[in-house]
Image (cartoon, rainbow, N blue to C red; front, side):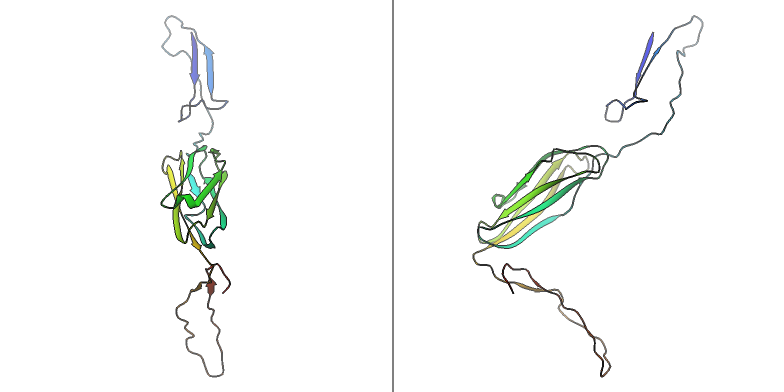
Length: 193
């Protein structure tokens, strides 16, 4: 009689040495109880976290661009788990999907590793264009991640002022003293302000 035992992981694959496989010759002796062989397995049990997808942004805003211009942004995909994360597909969906393209070489991401996706927007028509970058993976809890994308095409680039504050409160100031407050002014347009 030969006793063959194989220690399997939760996913069905053979556990690595030294506990992966065990083989022993066994002999049945008349009058003996049914115990053919006893052994003790010692060691720490290591439970690996499943694949867990994470992305470094929830939206890509390409801003305003003159018609015909292009801009590229990078999205980083991280596997926050221990087991390998399979990337099934990376695609662009939505009404203006044709204004955006993506390139990547993501197929499988080891635990703790990353992969990048380059997304390019081409201002192909006047006005705002919207789409979504969709990443399908083997993450059991979140098999699909969607990142909103937008860009605006303009015939002629124009400046666009944006001020973060709507009021400035200097409080009470004693005569002869001064106080400074900061106002942030941003140009979100495509030409100098």
